[in-house]
Image (tube, rainbow over all chains, first blue to last red):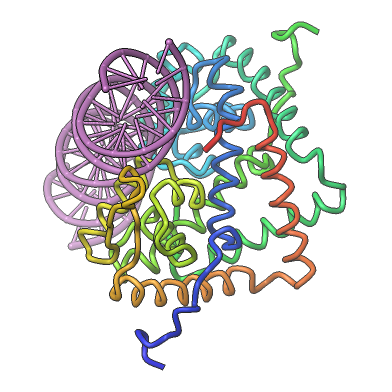
Length: 159
Length: 159
DNA sequence: AAATAATAGTTTCATATGAAACTAATTGCA
DNA sequence: TGCAATTAGTTTCATATGAAACTATTATTT
C-alpha cells in the first residue's frame, strides 16, 4: 500500500498513546510538586534538582550534577548561580584542577533542603497512595524498562 | 522536631523520586518520538497533537482541541496557524457562531497524518517491546491512577 | 434595545530554554 | 618546552513558552 493510500480509519486515540500520557502525567505531577516548593522557597525545578544532588554528594562539581540530575550544563550553571545568589549554595574551586568547581550547600541551604526533602517524600507518598505495594513495584519496574528501552533506541540523544 | 533541626541524614535519592523519574522518562520518550516526526515532517509536538485531535474529530473547534490535546489555547492557536501555513489544515468559521473556528486537515494533511500515525504506533510498539501484556496493563492502570490522584490534589491547576 | 458579561481565539511581553560560541584551565603530544 | 586537543563552566543568541491583555462575537441583564 502506498503511503498516501491508507484508509482514513487509520486514526490514533491520543489519550491511549503512551508518549502523550507520559508527557501529560509528568507535566501535571511536576507542576503540582512545583507548587509545594516554588511557592514556599522560591526556587526552580533545576535548583531543587541541584540541591538534591548536593544532598547526596557534598563537595561535588557542576559536571557531577550534570550527570546525576538530568540537567544540561547550561541549566546547572544557571541554577547554581541562582542558588549562590540565594546564599543556599557556596562555590569554591578545586585546587587540584581549577576548572572544577566544588559545590556545597550552606547551613541555610541544608535547612531548606531538609524541608524540601520532607515535602517531596510526603508528596510522593500522597501520589502513590492509591497504588498497592505490588502495583507500585510493577510501576517502578515498567518505568525502568521503558527508560532502558528509549535510551537504547536509535533516536535517543544523550542528555 | 523543629523544621531546621532534622538530621543531616534526611536525604533523598533523586533517581528514586517518582516525579523526577516521570519527568526524565517523559522527556526522553518525547525527544525520541520528536525525532521521528520532526525530522521527517517538520512539525512540532503541539502540531501533531492538533492533527491527532483532528484525526478523531473532524470539523472541531480550537476549543475542542484545547480540551482534548492537553494544550493551552495559545499553543493551539500557534500550532493551527503553523499547520495552515504548511497547508496541512484548513480553517473556516462556524456560521452558527462566528467565534468558533471549524478545523479540518487538508488532503495533504491527512496523508501526512496517516504516516505519523503509523510511525507513532510503531514507536509505541517498540517502546513497550520489553513489557509483557500483564506488565503493560499494570503500567497503564498505574499511570491512570497517578493522573487521577494528581488531578485530585489541591496543587493541581487545570490544564 | 442598550449596556454588561461571557466566550473564542490572537497578540504581546516577559521569562525559560538550549545549541553554539566563548573563556579558562589542563592534558597530550611533537 | 610549546602547541594542539580536551574539559569545565559561562555567555550569547535565537526560539519556545505562557500569563495577561486584547479583538471579535454572542449571551445576558436591565
